[in-house]
Length: 68
Image (cartoon, rainbow, N blue to C red; front, side, top):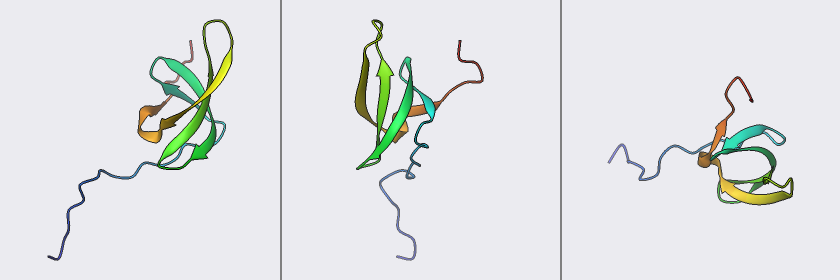
């Protein structure tokens, strides 16, 4: 029993506050860190209305080199 295997994968790292990231098909801004490896993000819909939601770190991806 010298090495135990973990059922969980490697722990993610919380993105920096204020970072622009990709969540699904949207570009979002990380507003805060939440509990349980989650982050609060802010994005806008097609009408320009801003809203916040909580997502897991693993679902956030860095942006590509080009925004548009």
